[in-house]
Structure formats: structure tokens, C-alpha cells
Length: 608
Ligand SMILES: Nc1ncnc2c1ncn2[C@@H]1O[C@H](COP(=O)(O)OP(=O)(O)O)[C@@H](O)[C@H]1O
Ligand SMILES: [Mg+2]
Figure 1 (cartoon, protein in one colour):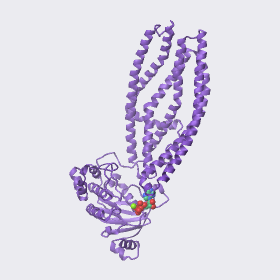
Figure 2 (figure 1 turned 135 degrees about the vertical axis):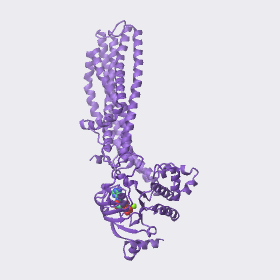
Figure 3 (figure 1 turned 90 degrees about the horizontal axis):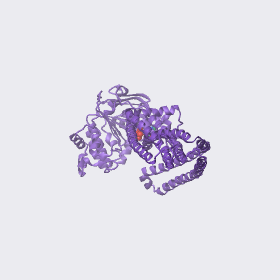
Figure 4 (figure 1 turned 60 degrees about the horizontal axis):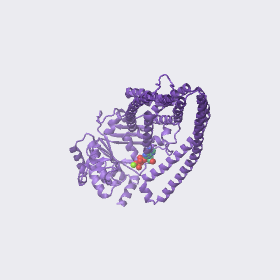
């Protein structure tokens, strides 16, 4: 259920239900407040400063009113001296004190928020990368990433400013209203009588306008999705000469954005002019009635000034509440979503540690015993049906079959990315579950068809196989992987940057880097998932040599649809539609006559 919200597939991120502020949601959000705990001393000091600075701000209207009265030879309050200069000096002293306090308040709050946010970021990132693959299957990574970063900055905003702002505004409001009554009860009652009208209109209109602006946001998000998807697949767009189609698609969404935005603007305009009318109406009314009271001698000019200044405080703080409330609401929604990720069940990979310690060494015997499996995200399709095979330590076992039959899925199961629904996977005769997850993954390496290199140097990319490897080991691995020569041909050698911002390596070069990586890892079990199938024959030859080197002294599971590479395999398992349809050595399978293997083999001979 919690998951349904996150995997909003096509829905734009803003299409999230706004949480109601109730006990349950607050309690959930409050769990994030626990991250403030290590910094609570600073937080409390900040709070005290906040309190002080708000209180000092409230003294100004009285002082300034007093100053005006003093100019007319009157004294408004006993605590305010009767001469202008003293009042001015006091005002400046308070002003200084306030600036001082404000500085520390801001400084402390930001520090606390940044530090606790970094903790939340670190924890949620760690959480995210330790979640099982299945979690990522039905979510767009880009969306997950932007959602998380947007949610976290929302929380950060709230912690740095909104919380403090709320406290300040509540102080201004309550303090201000009390002081208004002190200055003039009659004026205050007049003012307060206008309030309900304003509040009711504001609430009704506000809700409507918010709905419109949410729709506008949704549309905008939709238009961003168009841009993002087009840019991601820009080569496809170009190859199909669909630039015009994409441009039209974008223009169409933009049109609907405009439509909704303009509609929203109309209502916002009406609302704004109504509010402006009320506000100025209130100002006129207060000054009108106030002047009358001054004329009657009930209050002084200074009092009226003080009153107006306090009402600005009160009006300001009332005006700020809707936004503050909306911010809090957003922050709570954001923290709920962050907590959803935090509450997901992570993989059991033990403590976070870079040093990889293997508790149980495995020799490399792998067996599938009657394994049946469907991807958790697509339960209705059984991808593997009663798969059984066995590879003894050091053997080469080949999995062949048409594409889409579940070969890569078998690889994913060996790596324990998923658990079989029925049947068992055995390593050295023991069930996979009896090993720590990391023990298995630390002793299995995979060279996929499409190797992804991380942004960084070639050296770093090779060292990914074993982070503790020294320079010599990295070079040895590269040499054995047939990669040393092409690496040295780059001016910067092993320090050449690759990945998105670096040089583009060819498929075969990336493959050999992946092989060097795997050599460093020195796994008991090696999986080659169509490792050479996208290469031209020259790079295939070089990669094949490197693969031979890599396959020495370990169990190799070779997934291929090109048969030339697997003739020497100790065992060939033919997979079709998720089932093992035949197995044996090349000769045995050929002897069986007209089977899928025969068919594939004939096709290949014609191919060559
Ligand atoms: N992550 C996934 N979630 C759901 N279905 C998947 C996933 N990966 C693959 N499949 C489906 O499982 C079937 C087998 O895929 P795969 O193991 O990749 O085949 P092969 O490697 O033999 O080409 C395909 O029908 C594919 O659509
Ligand atoms: Mg595959």
C-alpha cells in the first residue's frame, strides 16, 4: 500500500495526496525530528534567541509611539522616558541587541538543519542502495532520485525557516493582539470585527486557487517528463526523425499549462483585489475611527501610531500563516515519503563496511534444484519453470536459448537479486539462504553484455572489483584482461576519465575493463551474460582471449546465443520458455538429433 504511492509510474510527482495534519501524520513526521536530537543543545539556544528577538521586536511600536508623544510633551507609558533622545538611544540599543540575537538564531538554525539533513540524506541513501532490486523494478530511477532530493530540500526548508517563522509569527500574533488591547480596546474590537469576513473569503478562495495551481503544477510536471524522456532518448528521436512529433507533443502540453495557469491567474486576481480592498478599507477605518478617538482625547497621537504599528505586526503574521501552513503540510508529506523509503525492508547485507570479509568460502559448485520463479513486479508471468541443472566447481556450463527465455533471470537468481518462488539454489550443496547474502555476492562476478562504467578514472573503475587493490594489481588485472595496451594508448593512461563526462570507450574496451574488474574480484563463480554478443569479430577475439583468462580456475556460467564460444563447455543447458529442454555436451546434444540445439547450431553455421 505504502508502495503504491511511490511507484506512481506515469503520474507526475506533484500528484501526491496532500496529507491532512492529524495525529498520525504528525507522529510519522515527528520521527524525522529525532534527527535533531544530536544537535538539540544548539537547537534550544537558537529557540531562546528566536524568542528574544521576537520579543524585542514587539517593543518598537511602543517606543516609537512614545517618541511621538514625547514630541508633544506627553509620556505614554511609565517605562518609556519622556524625552525624545533617551527613547532614540533605547531604541538603538534594542535594535543592536536584536541584530546580534538574530544573527546567532539564523546561524544556529541553519547549522542544525544542515547537519541533521545530512544525516537524513546519508541514512536514506544508504537505505535506498540496500533495498532489494525488486524495489527499483517498478520505479523510475530519475523520479525516485528527484523525488527524494525534492522531498529532502522541502524538509530542510521547513527546518531552517518555517519552524522558526511559525514560532515568531505566533509570538507576534498573540503578543501583538494583547498589546493592541492595551493600547485601545475600542479600536481593536473594530478591527477584529472585519476579520471573520477576511478569513472566510481567504479560506474559500484559497482552497479553490490551490486546486488550480496544483493542476498547473501537474501539467508542468507532465511537460517536464516529455522533455526528460525526449532528451534521454534523443538518439532514438533523431533516428526516427521524430523531432517535429516531439516538438508538437511538448507544445500541446505547454498549451494546457497556459490554459490552467491563466484560469488560476484570473481567480487569483479577483482574490487579490478583494483582499487589497479589505486591507486598505481596514486601514482607512482604523485611522478614521482612531483620529476621532484622538480628537475626543481618549487616546494620544503616539497611541494611534503604536496601534497602527502593532496592527501591521498582527496583519503580517496572519498573512504569513497560510503559506507557513502549506509549507508544513508539504514538509509532512515529504517526510512521510522519506519515511516510506526508510521503512522498506532492506536486504540483509549486514553492517555497512567497505572491507569485504568472506565468512564462508565456496568452492564454486552451483545447482538449481527445481527452481520456479516469477518477478515480484509481474507475478502473473512465471519466467522460470522447474529449472534444474548443476555445475561442479571449475566447470564451464553454458546456458543457451532464444532471447527472453529467462537466461539473465537465472543469472540474477545466482546473484541473489531475487529469491526463487519454489525450489532451491545450492552453493556447494548448501542452500543459498544458509549463507550471508554478501558472501555469495562477494564470490560471484558477472560480465554483462552492456558494461556500465562509473564516472571516474579507468583505474577507479577497475578497482571497483576490489577496492583495496594496489596499482600493481590493477595493472596486472588489466594486462590479463587484454586491456593494458589500449589503456596506455590514452595520454593519461589509467587516469583517463570515463563515464558520462569522460572518453567514450567502445563496447569491447568496456568489456575488457569489466573483465579486469572481475579478475581483481577473483570470484569462485563467474557469469558471462552474452558478454561478447554485441561485439564485432575483432573485439570479440580480444575479449574472448580475456574471457579465457578470466574463466581459468573457477566455475563459469556462460550465457550465449552464439554457439562458437561454448562448444568446449562441460555442459550445455538449452533453455526455452523458462524450461530446460535439453542438456549435455555439444556432442551429446548433436547426437540427439532434431532439437532446439540442432536448430540453433544450423542457424549459426549459416550465419558464419
Ligand atoms: N526485472 C524484470 N521484471 C519483470 N520481468 C522481467 C524482468 N526482467 C526480465 N523480465 C522478463 O522475464 C523474461 C525473461 O527475461 P530474461 O531473463 O532477461 O531473458 P533472456 O536473458 O533469456 O533474454 C522476459 O519475458 C522478460 O520480459
Ligand atoms: Mg538476457
